[in-house]
Amino acid sequence: VVQVLESGGASVQAGGSLRLSCVASGYGRMRNCMGWFRQAPGKDREGVAEIYYGSTNYADSVKGRFTITLDSTITQDSAKNTAYLEMHNLTTEDTAQYYCAAGCTGYRGLLLSPRTYTYWGQGTQVAVSS
Image (cartoon, rainbow, N blue to C red):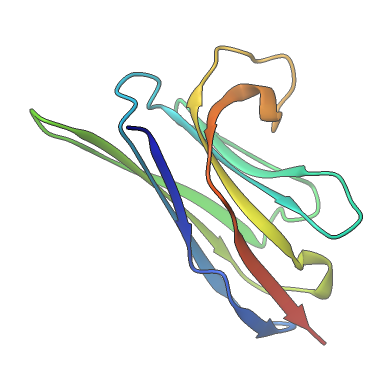
């Protein structure tokens, strides 16, 4: 069973920091890419950061403030990826539901595209107040 589970969302004041975590497991292959997306009320979902076969990409709005990292654990019986999103100097514009995505589809037409990913989590809420 594929599972993608996010955690770490919270309410913080502007200028603060958060670290989101995402554990993805159960899908075996296609382990080398994970991404973070977000959706604010009334807005479309947007790509925030991704790590794709070792290369990272960031939305312009978060460059220099957010960092994505990926840990992989592989045993004889299972494989698990954990993606972290370190977020610093948060602003009210960062308020959104943050979604983790995993499992490369092979699509690579655009960076930070949801078409890159097969599996999605349920999201974790980040609220930044001024």
